[in-house]
Length: 486
RNA sequence: CGGGGCGUGGCUCAGCCUGGUAGAGCACUCGGUUCGGGACCGAGGGGUCGGUGGUUCGAAUCCACUCGCCCCGACCA
Image 1 (cartoon, rainbow, N blue to C red):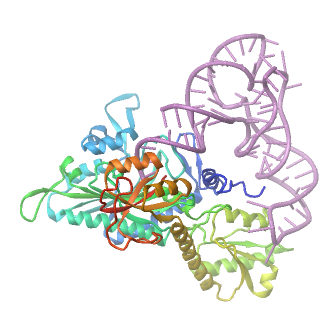
Image 2 (cartoon, chains in turn blue, yellow):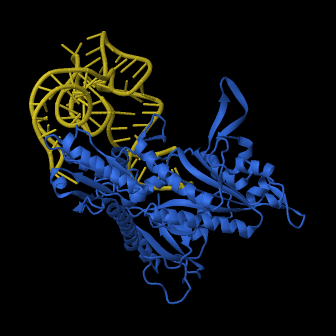
Image 3 (cartoon, rainbow, N blue to C red):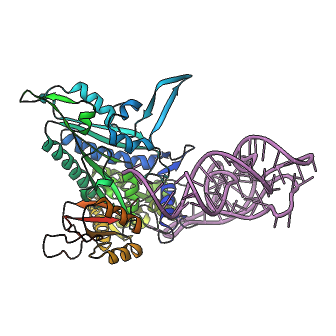
């Protein structure tokens, strides 16, 4: 037995599932599409929650909780929203032995129930803005499911805000998207492209949808977060009205935005390798694992030193675990913690103690060096920061190498077939071309980036003119990023 | 939802074709020796063979239905 993990090059999907299972992130349950998130996976989610929640609060948002069940009639109120979500909704038609007069649906998202409450709570412009976030589970009846990436039930946060004016709602929408991008890049070490979704990829009922898109290790794109400007669509459907400064009664402008446990899938597929998971230090439940090397009477010689080391690191603010289990050999532990993605491993044995040093091995580069015990805290803190940066740089470099600007449809088709990744191309904006491209190449418009030349775009045309549509040749107003996606 | 594949101790699988008392390796438990890249010896525990129904004296094995998982396509965070 060496790894029990299928190599990425052999079968990326299987590799992903192997990592999820072997690293004990999640496991299948008896309910189709529903996974049990195991303690190690949940610890990652808790760090994601903490990082985001802190940012939401810092930008004036507060948390609240709304019901899991929604009267089915409420869903029907916003036409596009119903059409978008109806096929994915789970229904409750019976309670105990009673048939329900009106069936309940299990929330696939909470716009309608929250909108209904906002209609009660908002009376005046003085009540605005309302900036509420909810941490919750939602259910979407999926046909094809994969752990973390698409599950029938998943955990997420959904922000729902109401504003006095259209520009304020737009500001909020973009502010949150920027927050998501900053979080993904600084905490998850995952570079993302932020931009606007095409009409056909828009959230059901939104005026505008924005997303952050990341590139996975197999060259497919993953939507990692979305932020929607809902305009007055939901305000009108749910009669969320207020009396304005000018005494007239108006509809509010709303937004909604969310990220989910899918981020854990993104993390796995952004950084992982054939040995398993690689976690960026800032999101790793254990940033360091200490493996004592047992020799002779090690419980009384090596172990106390390992405990001292642990205490020293805790003092330095490092999340550290001491693996003092006697039943496993050091070599076994090395492989085990590598597979589970711990950024740094420290080995301490008689030889180290003699030198007053400790062996340190990086998960990302596998470099192994000896560090003096003296001032080990600051040294490890610095090393963790280096790893965090190195993982981001590596992921960005990978994305750059797999992003290509193309000028002709033939080139587009050829590249999309042979080589996974992003293709940047001029697009006229029509749904017709988008659909055609999708059916011919499987690639979809991931988004239209805010930044005309995000890194990795290759040569930019001399002028600001994006050129003519890659497919139909009409004048284009935008450049879009295309990819096969999850 | 269509096409394909697979369901046998926790995991990977053999046994099925040709029906006759359920196996291996790994993992797990206990004892001992070990331990700087997945240690070794000894002794143990654990499966009504995905489910239901049928054929049969007898079904893991044959038949029907059903459920689940994986892969590939159409829909989605």
